[in-house]
Length: 500
Image (cartoon, rainbow, N blue to C red):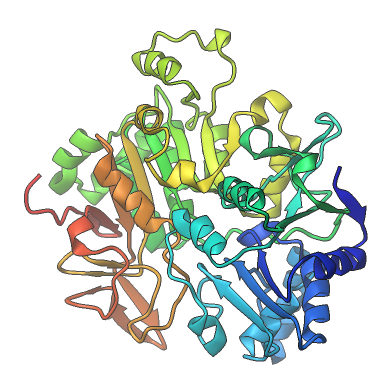
């Protein structure tokens, strides 16, 4: 059984068991045990003979309200949304370039735009595909994993990695191999009372953890409020919704363009006549051949399967609407029968409608997951990022599951030659990170019938000046031109491929 202890005793144990240099790995986004990390950070900062390197991504912090009238308007909103969410102390120091000399933070993805002016964050950014994160963190000497988990009395002896099985599941076999060779690597968990208990691949035996904090965390879960969707995004979503094929596979990202796509798919299903009349007003004739070949304009008779590194709120909304409902199975022969339409689903109730690696969203999203009946919740399988973002490993099964896949992501600039930019500015500063975008673009080229779709606002406004997001050249590339596929803007659909 794991050692059950307070946060301070957990810090004592970590310092006693691990060498001078502690290499701490934490999940991206929601799954960080902030209070434990703050306690370890404070202790190490007072011990100059010790060192701490933190490996993580998407370190979340509430927005700053600014000053004056802006602050008076924003502070009540921030208090309502973020409540008593415990801020990470290292993030505040990182923003000011004031980390202690013996502490470093390496991230492979950053909260977009939040650390553009932090020299230490920029210098210690690790450019790595999401699917390679576990490999790279392990290679750096990881010796401590700390993570929030969920508990459910209906699953005795189990804990769920909940929002973040993504990298942790990939790390476990690497950790086991190093432990067998005699290395000491600690796994620490802390239950958060409000984290949804996700069954399936994200469930671990309690014995998988060496340390469990004996006080459940009950602070406000970090949430991302739904942002307004502008007319540019609605038009982008409307165009992109015509390229999603019934009976296929869907991956979408977070943000207003993803929300706009969700809204357009809902309209295609629930009010198809109005949706098609909007398309007629836009005059889609230039792309009708492409739409007929790759997408469709009818409601979803067979439904979609969601396979997305991020289980976004939009996928749950689409599932509740009956659009995301195509089930996939963990056995290749069953999946083959399902694809042929000859599988008796009643005899095989373990089908999955969404595979996700991590989730983050509005508080209503977490609440909805907590409310789902167990049978329905089991259809949303949180799993390893290597399963979702790559084809190798169970490739036959993945190819059967991911038929007619549409991997729909966003970029902020596209060159006329077809290269896309999504993670870094031309001056070298990292806006966010590559994440899994390359993974999905590569999959789209490797899977039969799949397409990569990049959504792009064709122009932006700043300081009263309008600039084009479509340029001849740009001093950085996220997706190179040789991997270009479909680009969607508010003006329509571009297929910058010479021969198809």
